[in-house]
Length: 260
Picture (cartoon, rainbow, N blue to C red):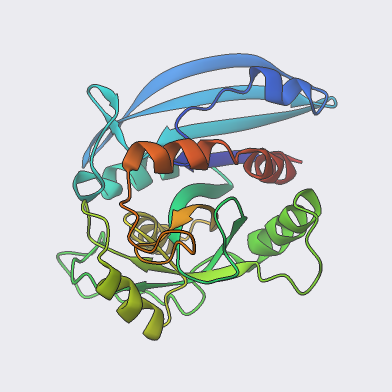
């Protein structure tokens, strides 16, 4: 398996040293590479791994990469460069890790689940086909085979029963501001279970590139107005990021399941 992993607020760095030892593996080699694309240069980290005697490759891309590191705001991310770079890395599949604000009552902060559908009403086009009419089907926006494997893993590591909801609809907001309470109320009425500012743009481009793509979503906070303890609680990016990175055990389980 040659697996691409895209991290964001929910997976800032790819520190494999201790994690891979826990599954009986080791990092054979690590290379930091600048991938040149027609849309710009993208830094990726390439890992050669051995897990229980089997060789694997893992390509990590931090979607918020910038000259100062993890800092590019969501509305400025060069998704076409990022997805071209991950495609040029010849990966077999792409696993995206996302931090989201939860709307659905069954998606309390700390839970890790999957994107089943997305809704993008931002009005901002994300496509490689700016010069000619090319229409891509996104009826099933995420790879069903990947989601089947990932759902099984996430149920097991989080001790969920079979009736636990594991697939949600991601509502793309433009950002970089968080949503208002009124916006969250409207989003729920229109079918959104969680809110975020990035992932569906990747999913669209992955479909155009015919890459297998799935999104693991960490519920890092209640969306605006949904915190049962404090409906007026202000959202803070640092707090959101800290909560997301405290819930990486299920994410690591997903990564190693895909590699296995």
